[in-house]
Image 1 (cartoon, rainbow, N blue to C red):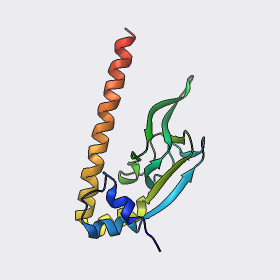
Image 2: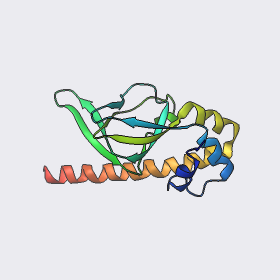
Image 3: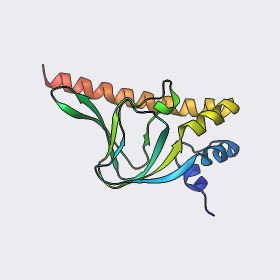
Image 4: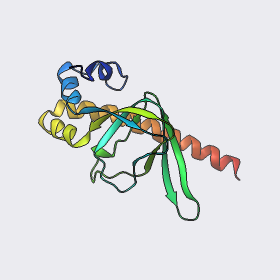
Length: 153
């Protein structure tokens, strides 16, 4: 039986991870598929997974009264979707919708949290990697806001 370990080991997010940690993570992984328009998760729901997008497109949306859903970001092949599984109270902060047929590797957040509690080195390594993603996304959001307010004086 073939595992997802070879795919995970080559992904930039997990590349260079200690082999024993990679095995622990692989035990929490599964392949998933989302059809175009399918809601992956909704704001306020329990955040119990994160995803490594293999191909396709996912839009991140927030709902605003009077304007409806607004796309705040779009993720594609190779991107990581979701970090709310890592931060209490483990609830999604936005909606995620497949913009087209999307295939991903889902990683079970509860499974990973348990493994991180048992192996703090794994937890620290994942936290460092997710912090880098959060930092990058916040910077991207900052630049979009600057652009938006600069073009609307």
